[in-house]
Each structure stands twice: as structure tokens, then as C-alpha cells.
Length: 161
Picture (cartoon, rainbow, N blue to C red):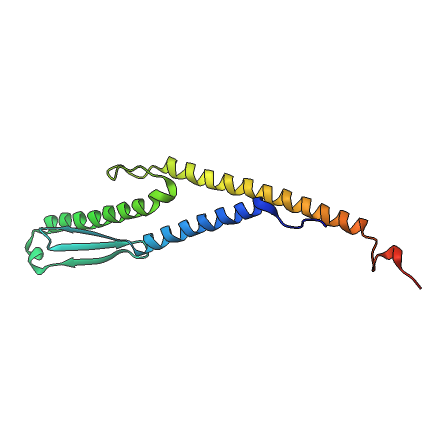
């Protein structure tokens, strides 16, 4: 009897895709939940930054309003930039496992490393799809051959009156 299973190639493909999708889902959840926090003016100005809302919180203690306007502006920028940097650090940490980023937290995200990882994933996916298509073609050919060689009941040449 012909073997119509897709074999270990498909199982490997399925397992790898489930693993990659699980990793992407976890990374996306961590990024969605990340909140970057920053402060300035001795803690009198607080800012928060998220993926969904950008700058989502800016608290200014009334005592900070006593600062000259140019200094208040600079302190607000410091708090917002600190929140943004904290958020970027959290995104980098969430992405490290997926993209094998630098382990040095002071280094900026390496876009070429991220692209290389994405290329590797894409090439692996393309290779697995090619293997799957080849395996499906073989199985289709085997099924056709099995049907061509079938001589039992229901075969067009075995019709009896």
C-alpha cells in the first residue's frame, strides 16, 4: 500500500513554524506591554512611552512650573527622551532572543543583525516550503500511480454488464 504521509519534512516544517510563530507572538506581547519611563527636574517631571500610544503620560509637578520656560522645556525633553530610550531598551531586550542582538545593553540595536536574522528566517521558510511542495508533488504522483495501477471494483476497465 502506498504511503501518503508527508514525512518528516512537513513535520519539521510545522514544528519550526510553530516555534517561530510562538517566539514572534511572545516578542510582540512583550513589546505591547513595555512601558518606557523617564524623569527629570529631580523627579518633578515624569514621562511614559509605549508602542501603542507613543508618549502616553507626562506629569509635571506644580513646583517644576517655577522653572524658567526654557529650562522647563529642556527638562520636559529630558524626561520624554529618557522614557523613549527606556522603551527602546525594553524593545531591544524583547527582540534579543528572536534576532540574536548584541548582549551589550549600551549598544544600539544593530539593524544589519536584525535583517540578517529575518533573511535567515525567510530563507529557511522558503526552503521548507520548497521541500513541502516537492514532497506534495511526490505524494500526488504516487497517488496517481496507485490509481492507474488499481484494477479492483470500480475501475473503468472492470465494468460488468
